[in-house]
Structure formats: structure tokens, C-alpha cells
Image (cartoon, rainbow, N blue to C red; front, top):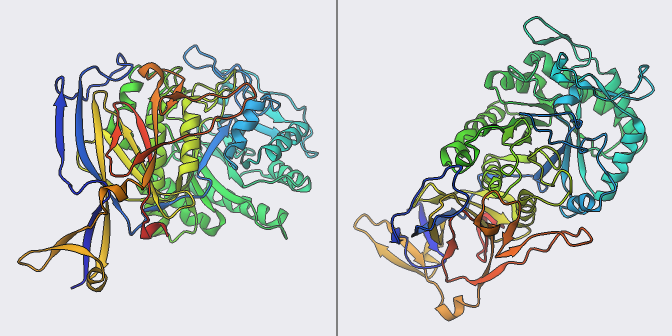
Length: 559
């Protein structure tokens, strides 16, 4: 009879959708004047169904990545200078919170790069000009003069990276040797002599590099300038050859990554086709919330249609890689949401976790292997506070994801409301699975039942102890026979409820199950203690909150 689809309900034996309102109608209105949940509330019950047999995406084990940038203190946007001493040149590498924040991931990928990487000279023996730092000059490309990375600073950085256990991706200057044309494009082949000398220095000193990335935001129309795709492919092949030669006899070799720019279908297609197997990862950048100065940022973050506006890029890149038969994988090399350094008390506050966690989940579901957040520290969108180094809410969101969500992404559906964003992954190091539930509604509590789609052959179905309900067409639906409630009560799930302090979306303090998350006097990262809930109970997702729920049910897809 072929395969039959079975929906296994893990909590209650009902797939019905019920809405119960109290104190008035549930509201979907969100704007920048609303700082938290509404006093008018409703309760909606519905079922989340997870595909238990198949995966839709697979990430790297160390999917979470964050960036360190080159911006000096003089980098300002909209009259605000938000970078302070957070650049690769002046960051305090002795700060214990910084060290422990990175160590907590064990490991954290860190991508070193950004706009000014394409104006960095490496002070290796082949460099015969003074090693000077960036100077603000609005007549220059990117509004700064060329800067220099002294090798003593590179030594200091690598000592820190080694101590922290970070995995490093270094963004190379891809504009060296090119000339800016009247139309604003950059013409000519990449002069890789300084980069080659720098890579040589790195290998001679046994510094571990996970990947070498070529250029920053030079794809398509580019930012500031751009390079033609066929030339970029040729330059990527040159980088691949350099890495193969310098790392001869060394395994594993670093990844070759390109282009670190905004997705443009035709440009990316040319790069993928012409670079061939010389590139290991295709990286693209995401700033889908628009400029940091936008007064409607909060409204955008809580709008499902805005969150979904990046899906086309994910799907497009995934399709290009598949159709080309490429062995390269998709990366998000930089994502800050709101460009030009973000927005204070938005991109460094609780509300940003709605955007950030949703982005992580969308990327993972489209087979993205690594997702690099702009930034680890610096600007108004750092995971860590620019001056105190204490974690912002998104740091804890990232660490929770890293510890709970495994590599395999599972398809999910929820028919109740688009204001509840639902995702599922196999749990970290487990055959079970974890749900991520993001409630964008300011007045609705969602009470969620969990179901699992399973596909069985006729023989497999006959071998199980199911309730069978046959129709006249000999098709049937089945529901697993749940144990008695007293037995279910012995199965406890773990829940992690994230909310803003005092219900204020602009708060930089996050609560986990009602308790403040903060580092102690030694800079130690707090432990994450879950609430243990009877598995027969519905999962309650309060207005404007986020829930991770580890479901104690083994899935074939997670074995």
C-alpha cells in the first residue's frame, strides 16, 4: 500500500486549533512606542508539527560565529561614534570577560574583517612603507586612509585566540593592485604578494587559521566599489593555489572563502561556476533591516514579512550551489541586521534576539553551515557591550543556540498564527529534538501542543500498536497510543524562557525563566538552568518572549 503519514502527538491527543480570548481581542499591533507586552491579552492553542524522518538543512557543529572589525574610534554614523576601542588593533586582549565569553562556546568561530580590511597592509618583511594606522579622511574610499597590521599585534592576537580556543577566519585585502575606475568599479587583477607574505608568516609561526576569506562586500554593485565576478573567480583561484602551496604537507588546510558580499544572483553564479572547486565556502552578508537610523526598527523586527525577506537570498544561493554541482557550502559571513553600526537600545537590546534567533533558524533551514554575527564587540550591535564587555542579550541567545541546537534542522509547521515563529533541530549530541518558539505578538500567549510527522511502510505500520481509523478508501490516520498520564509525568522536558527585564524590549538585561542573566564579579558566564516541565503539559509562550524546549522524544532523523 506504500507509505502512510502518521502524526504523533506528544502532548495531547488533539490537533485542533482553539483560540480563547480574555480581556479583549488579541492584538498584532507593534510599533516603536510599545516597549513590552500589552495589558490586553488572549490565549491561542495550536499544534506544532515536526517532520521526524527528514532533515532540511545541516549546519557545522560550530555554526555560531561572530566578527571582529577594523573600525577605529573615529568611525561614526548619524552623529554617534559607537566603536570605541574594539578594533583588531586596539581591543583589550587582557579583558577577562572577553576571554571567558569566547571560551564559553568552545569553540567560537571569529571572522576578522569588515569594510576596512580592503585597505589593510600587513607589515611583513615585503612591506617597505611605514606601518601607520587608519586616519579619517572623507575624500578617501570608505572615508579612511590605508591602515597597517603590525606583526607584533598579529602575534598578540594569535596568543589570545589560542588561549580562548577560537577558530579564526581572516578576511584578506582584495583591492591590492586594483585601480578605481571612473564608474566606481575596481579594475585589474589582485596583487597577492603582501597577502602571500602574511600567510607565510602565519604558517611559520604555527598560527591556526580555519579559513582565509577574500575581500569584503565587493560583489555585485558592491559597497564603495566592486570587482567583476570573472576577475574575482580568477583571484579566488589564486588564493586557493597560495593556500595549497604554503600549507603543503599540512592537514587540514584552511578553507578558501569568498566573496564576503551581498547576494547577487548573476554575480554569484559566475563566481561559483568559474572558481569551481577552488572555493570551499560561498559567503554572503545580511543587513535586511535597513539603516540603523530607521525609527521603525522595532516594528520591522516584529514583522514576520520583514523577517522573511532574506529567504530569497538563502534559497537562491542554495539553488546555485546545487545546480552547479559545487562542493562549496553556504556561509553567512557577516550579519548585523541594521547597517551603519546598528541602533543603540535596539540592536544591543532584548528585542534584537527576535531578529537574531529567527535569522539563525532560517539560515540553518537552508543548509547554511556558519553564521557570523556582526559583531562580537563593537558598534551598537555587538554581542558584548562596547565599553564594559558584559554580554548583551544576543550573546546569551547565541550561547543557548550553541548548546541546545544540533546540526540537523527539521521541517516544522504551525497553522495558528504567523506571529509565532517555530523551528526545530535535533538536540545537541542527542537523538531527541529541541524546539525554538519566537512569539512576536505583544498580547497573545500561545499554548503549544507538539506533534511529529512519521512515514511508515504498510509492514512497519502493522508491526506497531496503533489505533487505526480506516476510511472507505482504505487510507487511515493513526495516533500513537500514549502512556497513562502518570507514566507521561515521569518524562520531563526542559524549557528555557527568555524575556526582557520589566517587559521592556529596549532593556539590555535578559531573563532566563525569570532570573537575570549576568556575569559574576570574576567575569564568569552564568549557567543556564532550565525549567523542568511535565511532558503532558502544553508549552506556554508568553507575549514577546522566546522559548527553547527540549522534547524527550527520539526521532529517526536525529539518530
